[in-house]
Length: 516
DNA sequence: TTCCGACAGTGGGGTCGCAAT
DNA sequence: ATTGCGACCCCACTATCGGAA
View 1: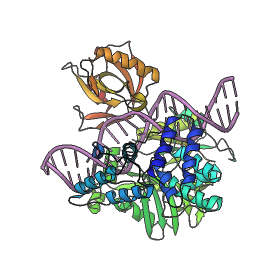
View 2 (view 1 turned 90 degrees about the horizontal axis):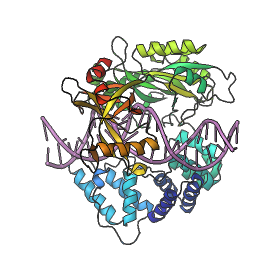
View 3 (view 1 turned 120 degrees about the vertical axis):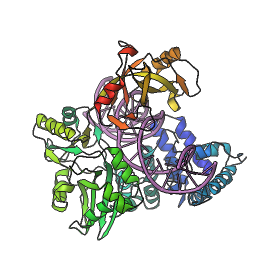
View 4 (view 1 turned 30 degrees about the horizontal axis):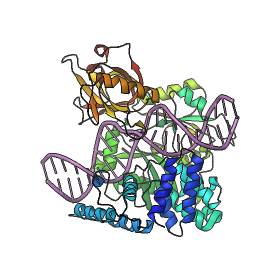
């Protein structure tokens, strides 16, 4: 199949807002692909590279080769070229990659260049991703969507499932099961502002015996880790299914020592201090990202696995069993010091006290879980709802950036500063684009155009007069910002026209919050 | 007819490894 | 030694479609 054919489909998908029409266009392309091409077509139309990483990003694609006149490259040829680019390493690899990229792009038409550049940059933005792909695979193959969804969660990726579905139909799709050693998509949590709302709003499993039963569990601020044990062979995977086995040998040892031949566990890896309090996320994250001298690293920043779920043990899959049963099995397997503390909910006040205690102990928050819920891999908000404390500050807008995509032509991302009463200046603490409705975007585009002190192509500096109420999760150490601190997960709550910049929060107030 | 679950888009800060400078 | 880039860790929130209620 020609790449051109895929691009025509992508253009059709991008041209409509109807999800049914997107699904139909993708399904059509999947049907036209044959044999091994299905995998590539499915991956490309979901905005995924089968290679995952090729060492080239947006920056490496800023200037493209002179395009070809006629489309001639097949999807298989594109795949081969991308694999070749990704396999370069060592001295001179950057130059070789550049040459190979130029060769490839010289064979592509202008449209194809744009498509491949967006694909590589991870910014296809055609209004369809994995969700549309699932429906399209079902439509193209005649296999029911629930079976497709389940296979994708167990296989980790949609593209191989597309291939199986179009080749062998339902029987081949049903063959895709949980394989110890191969990561499944982790179950995700929705969120709620308060513990009470998490308890009320939770989606309960219709088939659950006791629909009311729920528990609260500590939410640890570390790295999600999925551990697979096959005899002495242990493998560790992150939330995005990256393998990190070699980076956390102390975790591998703990899993290897568990009294089971095979097991698949879900949990969080976190660096704990000697007194048991958690290190900051930055410490855990840096340790987990480090690949150097692990003997020294584990000495300096030991990481503990804290498990909260068991998906498989000794040949038995548990993903369809209720959480209460999975955790009972987990308790029999994993020592308590490696299990996430949890408590059944008997009344909302008790759950709230649990939240308060855990936050006081330095943890990120809690997750409310329905005890009757199955492990819904790859989905959010099904039976798990997280709650975290929220801080707010009144800050001053120092500059704004022009948006892109659906925010093109609107001033979007705002730069935030705290007042320094000693100098009268403002100290930047970060940026945010979150929490803005379309109406707010229109309003702020007008407002900041009025306050602009220059006309930047990208960043527009403004007179520091507009106060905005910002919510955020906490403070972190920063080398980027002048105060040495930055906001974590900042988002806009509202613009405050009842306050002048003189009344905004000061840098002293921010520092007093601590945490960085 | 209204409501709501799922999804895609729009980006945030920090950190490491690696190759080039 | 420093810098820039790529990749990946953590992520919040709104708009929209289409099926559920």
